[in-house]
Amino acid sequence: MKTMLDIRQLLKSYGAFIYTGDKIADLELMEDEIRELYRSGVLDASMFQSAMIILRQELSKLR
Image 1 (cartoon, rainbow, N blue to C red):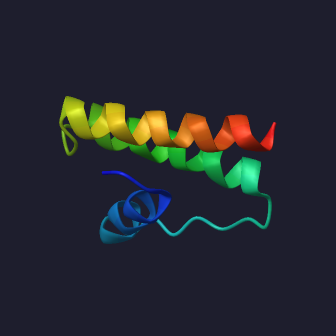
Image 2 (cartoon, helix red, strand yellow):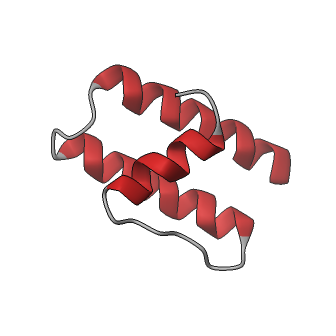
Image 3 (spheres, rainbow, N blue to C red):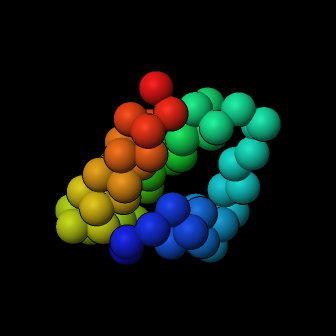
């Protein structure tokens, strides 16, 4: 997983379509969904870590 598109496609494959119109809120919701997928055992640790790094980088660009 290397880009935001990869994260969006991953979430989409599990039925999570996130668009609120607020980029920061979207990224925070994506973080929550990724955490939930990891907690439920759907994502392994490496996918979880790479997704969280990408999301945090995007958040830091917007804040």
